[in-house]
Length: 260
Image (cartoon, rainbow, N blue to C red; front, side, top):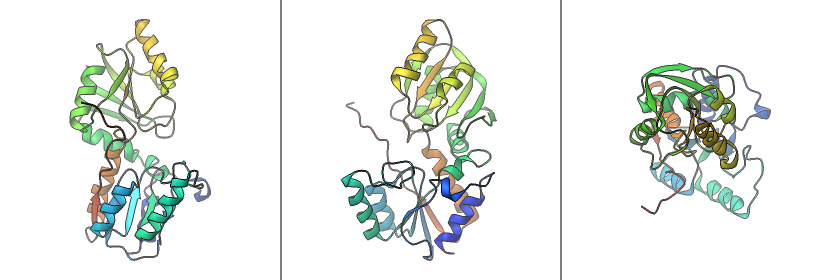
């Protein structure tokens, strides 16, 4: 199998066709015509992830997020971006971004992976917007209980809660990563799980909801912590579909470090 063939297969997983002229799901560096034997999967093509994947012998690295610090990766906006591109070219690895197609799977691959590893009982519901879905808990939880559960199950260092933390709720909006619509989803649900927020906007909205007596909270998981299990699930899918290929997930780690 060639790298290009696996990329075409990944695109076929989408529940709806995409116009390649308007998607960020492109080859960022490398030769898709190469023969494929080892596939690396991660959230970001960080230098450390690339070094580990190359040392392992991977020809292809599938990532979920940008390589050159802009969504479409059509620009090299900083001097470091040029250095990174040269580093990747020298490594010989091919990097492909699997983002739009992943979120347009049914169910959304990223949401499916997060919910799978969260081990929560309840019902998945497809959302109205791109990369936004919902989950209805079988048993009510408080935001604090939910945060503690997610930190344990997903190995997250720290979840921040904006809003009401001690009243039980059931409906969850899954805005993993940073897809937008957080304020809209907070109005309709008890909790919003997301990777990033604008604190003066959605954060203060959640706080004011709580101080006006509403049971609403945003749980900020970190961008990587809110989506990486979708990519971990992709590794499992590829292992089942292609046992002839060696497929391995490489952890890029959470972005922030902490003092304790």
